[in-house]
Length: 237
Image (cartoon, rainbow, N blue to C red):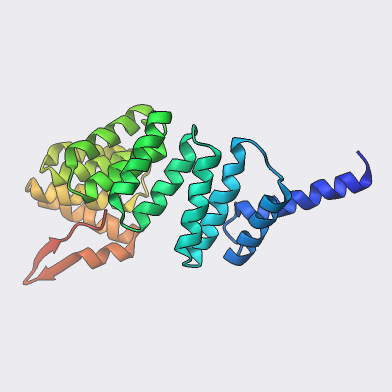
């Protein structure tokens, strides 16, 4: 390879790294500029090209430019209509705009194209849970666990659904598995503590809540003590 070709490849690599922002340290304007350069120079071809538009869309979202972000997400879908990820990323955007119907439509499409796409399962489950559609949320979390049984995040959130369904014993079991997989997962201790409390097991409830707050002091916001009686509120979905 000639020296000029090596330099060109190196320059393209730098631009690609800025566009993809893998380390999370690139400023949004730089991301947008780099991705735009890749689009203008036709660096990538085929369905992989959708990543450029998704990355630029994320840059626009960070700047609060929702319309340009949506335009890029739409282009990403057009570039790779038969691939699940573009629909998933656009679904996340819609979810962030609280457009539940559009988000669910995109997650459904992503999963129809790739049924084992765990991120889409978890994202759809979260929306179902927020809409109090607990049976569908439970089904999605259960499928995610079947596909990836070592995912502590799936276990902890299915435990949350069990808790909302007042199936406290199952909630304890799910949170215990989440804790086994990730002993530092404060949310799992907190939710298991809540389930223990509803089961009337005060010592275990107090122990778990204390551990949760030690691991994540922000959870103390959901604990209140009045007249020596403690009560808790569940953290956000």
